[in-house]
Image (cartoon, rainbow, N blue to C red):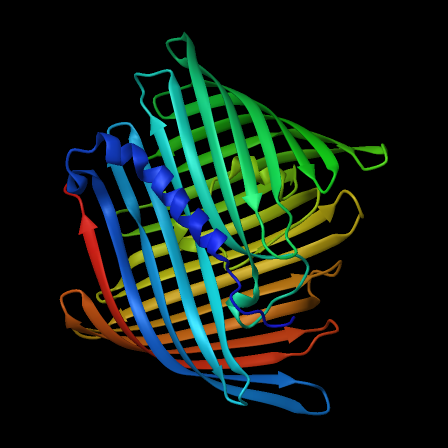
Length: 451
């Protein structure tokens, strides 16, 4: 893949800001004191300089390139609550300028990822609504790249509302509508989808609930109209140290292509999730089977656990997807360290081509508090794609990140980062290695509400 300068456009950045502003607007209107609304909120801004070395395997020879770099980065994340209003968000972005050592001039590379979700839910009101925004690095069968800024950037906006009725003391009936739209750049097409749903739930005991969910989604993707109907029986149970939720049913998709041809597809769908949590750690295991495509998912744009947002998202056509995701977070691995781990595997069966593919991603983040002023962090992630043979990886990338930071003032730190990326491919593309050494000066803030 050719390297592109200025990958994330101003339009992407504008949408990012608009999503956050729109989501936080209810707080600005109703809040009396901002600090009273904060559950947790933290952020930072950094300037960095360093050197980047890229090595490309050309088969008979090796091409190398070493560039000095200069850039800025920032991140913000947290949760805000006031009354029936809640907002969760996590965003990060980097703007980097590279100087081509061969005299090719300067190139700007931008990478932005993150998500936010605003929700209004008042148990005393029949109406609820939500707003969501996600900005992702997207790959459309282009394989992995060592430089994250070389991916396409996709912004997704979603909005929805629900109306609840209470046919009995123990029962709730909710009708809802959701809409989603994506804004792509370069080779990505804008997409949109709509979903109408009804959810009936009944409390079975003090901690358990059962119900029936029915939905219909409409999408228009590259001239193809797809309608997906889904019905599932669901059950949830709250436990002293966790939760259990499950559901099972079926989905049916009707597709109408350009030219008037049609097709029908059906699949058994469902999910099973088990979670455990204490004050110091949280673990979850989730299996999910669904019939959908990337466009359909737009109207149901509920980000996963913000701690484990994927580095890249692969666009897909109408597929039956079986996925298994395991996550674990702990703040007390030892007296002065914390650990975050995730692993996910998916099997995708295309309903259009009949092809079966496999996708994998794993990651681990480990932090050590060396002294009161010094911290050491290790991070590793791996993503891989395979075809029909699950154990034959066609395309994969390894990323390793090591950083040391020292606190200079209350909210200011200096750090050294060493980032490594290793791209390996069986496809008709070159293997690449990239090594980057950065010196980073960071100023941040952190707030935590008293509850």
